[in-house]
Image (cartoon, rainbow, N blue to C red; front, side, top):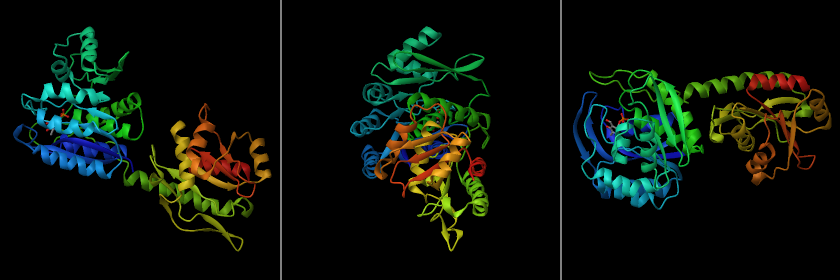
Length: 428
Ligand code: PLP
């Protein structure tokens, strides 16, 4: 699974900080590692105390994580002081992954989460390293050193904050407007992202949004797409925020947990497709090494998020048999083909292997299937498929590799197992 990192403070009430970050990253389907900078004692009504951790120990945590994992993207949240900023910047400077800075300054309940040294250090040491900084109106005013009252001020503030080359997402929640407009500054242009104004966003909205963005970037999305996807998620998080105490409500990062329910659904759909296939598939379209059908979770990031029949379907004494149960992470080769297709066509989440034969190819042509032929060496599956479908406007119905005739396999593509069954029935 892809890994992201949050470097942030602990929030004892669990609405913001590290606790929100881990939930938000998990929802996007990324493993969250965490380095704690400060421990806060707080609840929905206020902050009772802040205990910044010794810089040496923040360094030890960071080094432990970065030495071990291939972290794909990192965010910073509450950093509290210049000393902590320097400690974190010194280490991140030597690592080449996107850095998203959420310039946390004040808690939702109005308490300062930093000392007097933070802002200067953040501007000097962290902003030059980051790809994206995500201030709200107040934080942008502090970072830019100016008041923001109109669109010209927004532009100037973004230019000042992003002057070292980073993009800026200036969040519009605190502006006095009927809708919420966030401004995404990408050095040469500003993209306006307008959303309906829901209720006042609860505790943890900033942390949750920046974590959604970081996790999406860890999955390989560029800034614009990571922000767009995350903006949709935070909208739902605010729409479903809830009360846990006597003060502020907390946002709900768990909006789309790609957990058991989605996994169970995928396995259930595959199971029923497999039983139907076992009734209808003739031996001659089963490849010698066995056939398989695989289905991916939405936005799957790796083979572990794709389910298939364990040890394939093979023919024994004239009967099609299952090697094992449907499970996740069992069909690597097929999964890599599907993952490449999904990068371009995310709705195409089902793939099935068939033996190559000329009759099947003829029938596919007769029924109007689009077939792409690909030179697909085993060690360059992803590259080959990317190249073959890169410029297509619609997903092909099948990909055929150009291996020797004996080893050649047809890989049928569909959005889900039911559509796959329809396609199979068309060509039988
Ligand atoms: N980090 C910590 C540890 C916090 O306690 C808070 C707010 O209280 C924040 C960050 C910022 O929260 P928000 O996402 O509401 O801006």
